[in-house]
Length: 456
Image 1 (cartoon, rainbow, N blue to C red):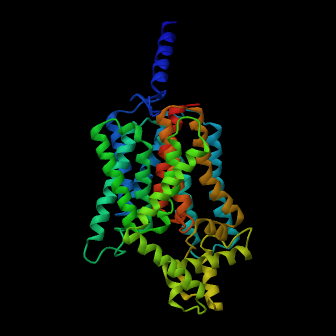
Image 2: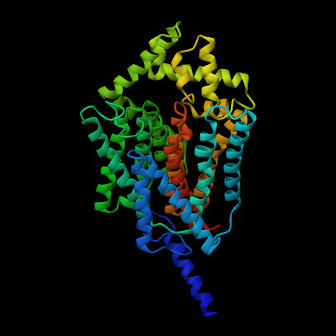
Image 3: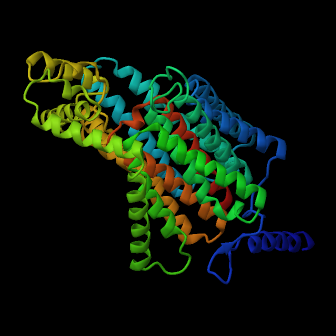
């Protein structure tokens, strides 16, 4: 009887600490104590995981092979954890659905590759890219089995954001530049650089209530957010810039802890539009958008397949999108198979009327057109569901659990998915190994922590 009473008191104490408290100005605060956990790990282990997570994020811009090894390390940790302790938390229906979606995503890729007679370098995409989503299940199982303090998560994001901001400045001021002179990229693509910078900056905003009340932490977080926005700006990636407005709207709307009204959304949209107008006044931003407008008009007026305008950044994309749409029209259900885009595009160029550069491209720089053209309609649906499912889950989680740590985790998931969803309109992000590793690791972390803390 005494043991049961102690257990009840213990649960009540943690439950009380996990409830948000509203201040006079409507803001919500939370004590440092987390929602109930099964077995918190030792501080040294928690910070070791945080350091590994930070290294994985930063090394994407330096040497993505190191990030890949760290990702496999998390997967191995999940496998060993399950082998040693078993499943401390039973699988929920949401988890079973998520695992099924990952399996379907991979099987659609595999079957499309096989049905289309294994075209080109498709095996690289099936095994080396899409197969990583199955490995992410192991990383998720690790993160759902341990409790990581919130400060470990947001400090990891802060250090990564500062790193990208500083590296961006060094990159732009290095004689000769790196791979992309005039744009921050280091040893990766400017789009990758901008996506990770933006993701880390917005994740820090999600944890605003955890660092805003501590002066030292607040200065670090604000410096990191500036670094992340600087990295985003210096990357010159217009496709990533487009993801910033909807993310800011989502964040501003999420700060309403009372009943959401249409005027709240309109105010958020108005604030974002005003910020966009001000940013447009920056010479570098203005120049990039004028370049896009000139490239678009030049491409639309082009009548010669060898016209140089078809090789510009936007002109090349428009040519690749046109090719993808033709592939979809010819093979709407089954697609041309992973690796089949380049094979089919080469055939188009040989037929005439297409820019010669098209045959060097292995995808259309649009993850939705890529999914449909390569893997058919099932590929498009599985890709969309794979991105939509985590968002639907965390929205439901926010409604059921008012604890502020769960709200921060949920909002962080929405932010990272939004980055990939919007940027995917002009880049096939979920086809790129460095971004797949980043995406899978952070979603496994955030979703795993949310599951560990709810246990329902």
